Image 1 (tube, one colour):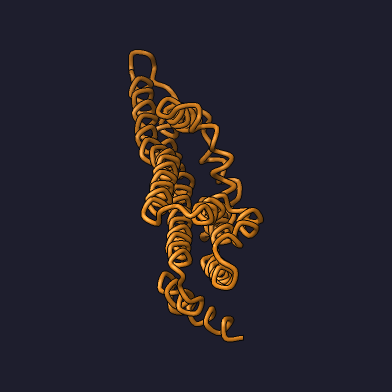
Image 2 (cartoon, one colour):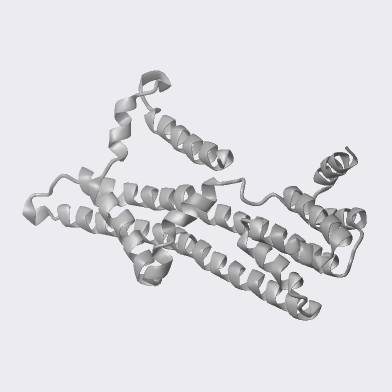
Length: 269
């Protein structure tokens, strides 16, 4: 579970609500003041128009992936570089003792489709350069797809403030219309509320909803790319007959020093 995302978003919402409550006598919290920030017209304009523009900007195939995006966002256990390094070292030991054909069974047991494909490519004794070309192309195409998905939320983050301003203009226009002295004036409060609250909703959508989602998806993409690059380097080294201990040291250069220390201690045990 991605606890940092949950803590950040929920914490921001709570702090915003507490800030809305301030303003009573002596600076006391007044929960009823939160109702002042609710305006149906603002919700209708900002949220409705933002979501529809996202729908208009992306194909149905991309919109269908939205549930999968949240699954990826909340899951932090999918990409573990150290676990992958351990698996590659184990594969190197098997290949060194029994040859590359012995890796076929390991490949069939592998749940990661990219890892499985890489193993099978060297089991079939394909040319090393061609194998690497296939794997690198797979990484590039997957990263492009992830970039497209994150771009959906970045699009929402960019248009939400714009529709917040649209709502502000709508509210100001209605307010000015209500100031017509020939019609006896009118209640300026609701129109002014729509003018101001809509901008607030646009900022909330952009910076508390869409922005963090896009950032988290890009982080997941970076983690996946790192793990895949480790797999590529490891598989190529195994095909070349690398020593398992040397392979571990080589692959550990992809991770931070703290993780290297942890993995080296585990390898020593």
